[in-house]
Image (cartoon, rainbow, N blue to C red; front, side, top):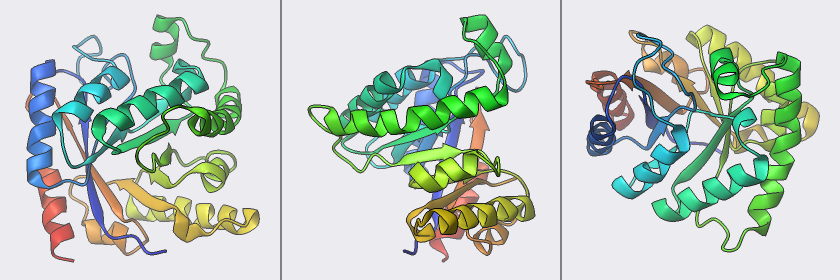
Length: 254
């Protein structure tokens, strides 16, 4: 299965008012992006560590109502913060609000301050990966039981590049994989994902390959290595869209 080149914008919900974030979503949609993402943290990751910040899935409900065309989702949800059945129900509900445009992005979690400040057990990376592996079948099962079911395909996106567990779980469960790094680093992880697909009997063409495009790096260098969903990010309050607009121009020239 071949995937066309697509463009995503991660509107990071930090250092901005709700009104500023909503405006950024609409500007990104107007620019022609295929998907708009936020992230699932409770505190800023860049800049003032105690700066303004808003919760992920509540914003996704608003994003679903405010936008009309792009897919929407978290890049990515932290599995630790919500019961898997509840998360499936939340995603199904956002899918209905959006008219079938929701992506259920998920990862194992890593930002310790979120855990400690909000009363979650941080544990170890193996603990969190084990929990993610246990949650994914529960999410899929619940999506199959909900009434009404999702409107759209509600693809599961897994973010991360751990070669032993994360990429194996991606081969088992995901419709989209999101990775990071230079084109060479991303490609190394992409090859490992293909290897897991071969070992598990999964058609690698079923998994769309997504990447956070580094500033100043030619997007063609990622596409040449197999990426088809190119994601740029922006922070409040200004939410500069120059990078994502350049990616849209690149996409449209293909």
